[in-house]
Image (spheres, rainbow, N blue to C red):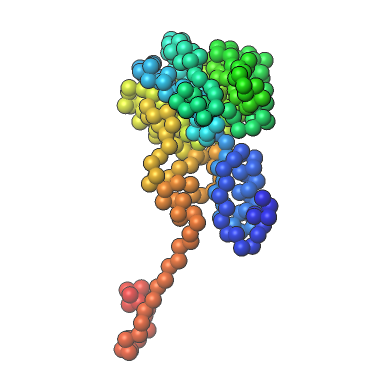
Length: 291
């Protein structure tokens, strides 16, 4: 990695990975005069307002939280229902959906909802964070710790987990788990829910589920996160828009997808030319004369 960052011929570097490595790459590359874009971790929140369609919100959370085994930068890993009644209704909807998830090899096709995580180390890290959540007082509503797949006992499969009553001081809230674990943080008000998304060190993506246009507009205007979904759980922009987060989720001035991805690997060159006509015009003393 340092060979790339130090090589005098390489002038632009793009990276996706953990925040400490992203920050290191950005710092070392920039110190060597390179253009660097480095994407780090994420902890994407989805706020669920009391007026939201709860079935739609639950389906969105299951798809966004457990798809690809939760191993994607745009996965929703924190559900933030507003109000105790909203939280109770949401958990009631989530539990049977999560318990029905089918885990297995991707070669099984449509019979599998998600497959293994990437490495044995990733599996150990996910399960260690699950244990920390239990020890720190979160309520494990769906427990996937004992999941084992016949014929794949040594595989990197992790059962689905759902936590309730998670608080911001817990490791499962602060750290990116990057696995099939959804944490529920109950907020008393919209302002508290908004504050959770805004105060977290990561700012990659976020979403809100609501029927109220004023709430949606206020959320989109205020939240300091790079990609925002309104009743869309994974707000990945279309190809002609840019992709990228804020805060410690991204380092560098341009994003990855869309027009910015081309601008990043190019540099603007401006050429101003004029060809003499043979007519003597005298000295130009202002910009108008120079045109």
